[in-house]
Length: 143
Image 1: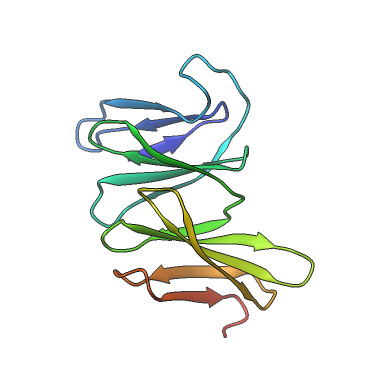
Image 2 (image 1 turned 180 degrees about the vertical axis):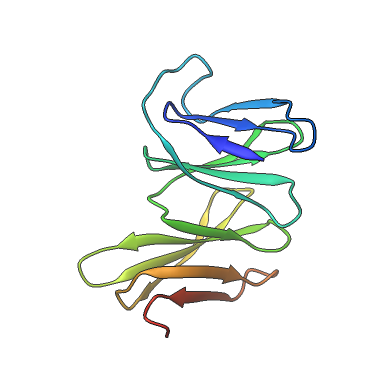
């Protein structure tokens, strides 16, 4: 289980024992008291990686077993999903005045592979194929 805190810290808990095995500093360091609330967390389908998103527009991907940072991206990501093999990340990177923006990222390199523009509406779900070639978006307007 993962929990996010107001001062850019993520805690990984052992859900069986309740012990707190990992402390992941989303900020510059564990001692950093930067106010940047964690507002999104997501595990990969294989539970090997954890995405953390903070209000500082930083998205970080962590190795759950070691607690090491795998990659870090600067983006405003409001909604995100891993591919089933955790190699790719699909993200709704928000709205501008006319469009929703969707991006597909390579998790290892942190490189954005593709960005798409869609109709302006709120996103309710995202999916990405294991090969990273297709992404699907569920929108609140039902289309």
